[in-house]
Image (cartoon, helix red, strand yellow):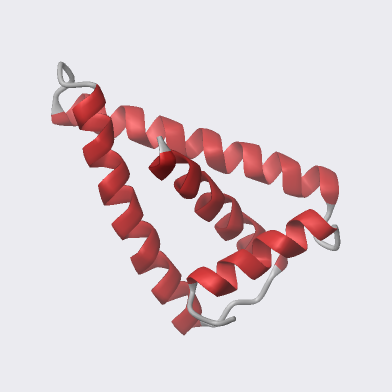
Length: 101
């Protein structure tokens, strides 16, 4: 799923910025709105691929997937450090998604 890939990138970028960066409140809000839109789309796609699950089960499955993404990103950031090129790239991605190039 392409949406899952983008969601993982956005979650990783958010983790990097929250641990290592200093985004403004406006940037955080804009990013959160874009992430919420993507999460809505990802949830719809998850429902389409798992038609036997009810809304509560889908929500739990989605939450577990996002938690796994967050944990993986946090581990990567801790291992690499905030000054690593990979983490710097994640923070740049956050700013791009937040609307500041």
